[in-house]
Amino acid sequence: MDILQAIWLGVLQGLTEFLPISSSAHLILMRFWFGWEMGDPQAELVFDVALHAGTLTAIVVYFWRDLTRIAGAAFSTAPERAVDKRLAWGIAIGCLPAALVGVRFEEPIEEFFRSQYALIAGLLIGIGVLMAIVDRLGRKERSLESLGILDALLIGVAQACALVPGFSRSGITMIAGLMLGLQRESAARFSFLLATPITFGAAVWSFRNLFKGDIPADMIAPMVAGGAAAMVVGWLCIAFLIRYLRTRSLMPFVVYRIAIGLATLGKVFFGG
Image (cartoon, rainbow, N blue to C red):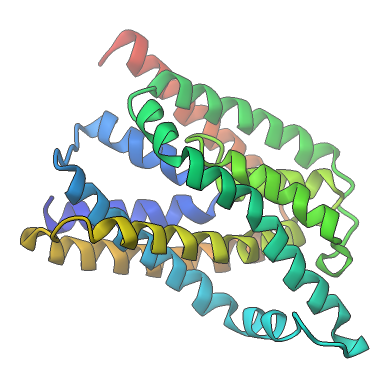
C-alpha cells in the first residue's frame, strides 16, 4: 500500500464511519471496485488499527465536553445531574449488545462478507429504503434528554447489527432513534456518543491482535497517513452531520446508498 492509497482509504473511513452509509461496506467494495488488495492479513490488521485510532480520536475531540460531563455524572447523586447520569448508564448498557456480539461473531462475519458483494449491495439498498421510511414517518419530537435506559438498550441492539457490512453503525442507530421518536439531531448525537466506547473497544481489540505479529516496516507510514486522514475527515463529518440534521432529512444518504448498491449489483452480475 502506498501513501496516497492509505490516505484515500483513511478519507473513506472518516466519511463512511460517521455518515449513515456503512464504512465496512465501503472498505470492502473499494477493494472490489478498484482491485486494491493488501494480500497480507497482518498488513490489513495494522491498517485497521490506524483507522480505528483515527476515528476514535475524531469522536473524542469533537465530544470531549459532553463525554467528560456525562462520564462524571455516572455515580453522582446530585438531582441536577440526573439526566447526564441516565445518559451515562444508557451509553454503557447500550454498548453491551454490540460488544457481546462482536466478541463472539466479528471474525466469522468478516470472513463471510469479505467477498459477498451482491449481499452487501442488497443491504445498502434495503437499509436505505428503511431509512427513508423511518425518516419520513418518525415523530421526531423527543430530545436527547428524554432518552431512557430501555431506549438506549434498543438502540444498542440495533448497533449490534452494524457488524454486518451494509447496515452502517450510524445509520442503523439513527434509524432506531427515529423509530423511538427522537429528533434527527438528537438521534445522531446519541449515535455518536454510543459509538465512543465501541470504537475504543474495537481499537483495543485490534491492538490486542496486533501483538500476535510484528508491524511490517513498510506499513508504518501508510498507517500514520491513513489514521490521520480518518481523524480529520471524521471530525469534519461529525460536525457537518450534527448541523445538517437540525433542519434537513436523511434522503441524500438514502439516494446515495441505493445508487452505490445498484452500481455494485451491476458490476457483480454484468461485469465492467
